Amino acid sequence: MKIWATLAIVYAALVVIIAVTKPEKIWNMKKIELFKKILGDKGTEIFFYIWALIFLVLGVWLFTK
Image (cartoon, rainbow, N blue to C red; front, side):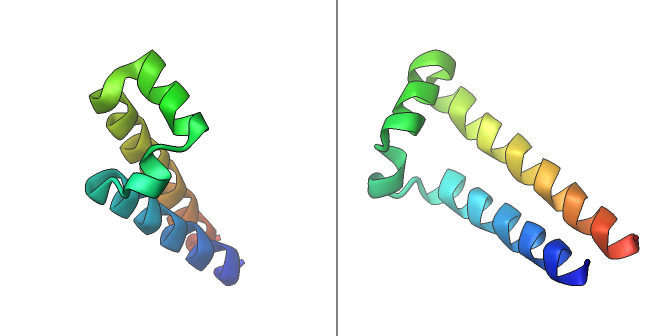
């Protein structure tokens, strides 16, 4: 379980890095373009933060289990 917890926390950190830096290659992918069309640029960024928070909580929960 500790491996899954570590992976979830690392994934959360990567999602936050993507949301903050907005690398052009990733930020212009079709799926993210769809998110930006529906949610707007700021909404997509907030979605990324919420997604990262979910995986951070999952990682912490897996560590305590």
